[in-house]
Image 1 (spheres, each protein chain N blue to C red):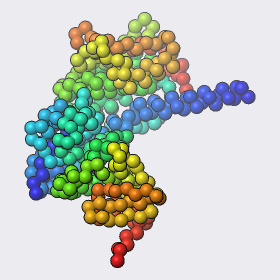
Image 2: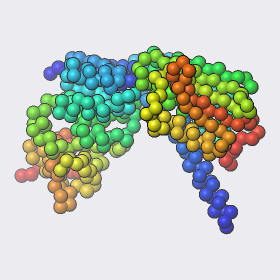
Image 3: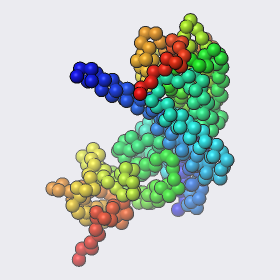
Image 4: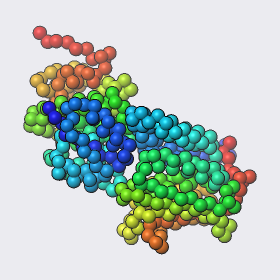
Length: 208
Length: 218
């Protein structure tokens, strides 16, 4: 399935780096570039790409403002790319697919791209359940396993420490997160979630 | 007892000042974007360019770490840092940055806080040049004026409007102002204004003194 993309960054080298990585994927059919927030807004309105790689810190209009200008309901899927990790929570609050830290390393980039494709291909089901959006925070764990799970509930994003989770049960496209007396619903499949969890902490069992 | 307390208080103030200076010089934003640029050069198999940039970055980091205990350095050294920093910025923004530096030889050995020019220049790049997305020019000059070293950084960004608050000045400028106040009190000054021919000019005056009066923390 062809994928149209937009790269937004004010540094030519940073754009070039993402372009090289994107062009290695045969499914990517178009790569556009924007040099700042204003160009990004124009490019999104004009070509409505499937996926945007969006730098957070840019002159005049930053990445979050781009999303505000377009409006979350019209915004294509977004992967934020930034030198800082201080914006992670903000990024997850607007339901970004992923959050890449600079320097962007190919292996990590590919994971984000896979995640984005999954999200794009399952868009129908994701849209109908916007109020319950579960997001994974993968940035702070050195081995790449999730330490905290971001759960959208009652219009707020709350974090649940992976340590506090007693068990996780699969329910079609969702999983139920049982932590103490609270149960959260996350819009993620068990297979996706399992890859993000430390196998030393979580053990998969099949119900009979 | 009282003196001891005083000393430890001063020590901790000094430590936090050093840490701030270090953070100022090693802005994470700058550091990680530079590492990203190097990563891309490697990906593009531009080994020579990557090597050169790693060299500049290493020299810059080494310098920062060496001077971390020092409140002041000679202007000559500060200008060396600035050159390294600019060499990196020029790779990151090749089409956007033209910098001219003119320093009166009489000011070379003058002691200045470290870092002093780099945060101002970074501010100009981010708020001026970075903002316009087109080529920008920065003029940096150092001269001896009325017993002070006068440092000027002039860019060609769109001028300041009266509504620009001090918050818009950028963190680099605010930190530098605080630093000058802390080290020299009323004897130093920092002014930001619109240039005569457009652009924004930052002018700093630091009491002229030479390195034997360096303030060491040890």
